[in-house]
Length: 148
Image (cartoon, rainbow, N blue to C red; front, side):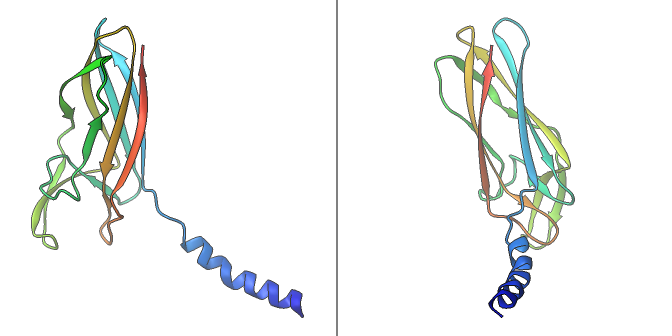
């Protein structure tokens, strides 16, 4: 009887475990490519699943806006801001503002000047992923890009 009760509870609770998984619709990758002896272009790629999207750096809402931050280092200097391709732009009647966003895949670039022969570029990306039904809480990813 105890065994039957255990099996019954197990089968009832399995669906709740599978729905409790957090969605991660955006995966990030990165690499650096030397342009010449001192100039490097850092590529930051977001792969966005299904009907999800992430917002651009130009979105007026602080909570939704994509943000790149780089830890300061004597090994390199940033040249300008992180560049992005032209986003999709649409008016959203729910938030009552024009939104700019990316779908499927997007590559951002940041130019740096090396002050030494190699550097470790520590980067944080803050973003919000949404689809037509929901937005996930803002997320942040950190990564280190080795430049040699």
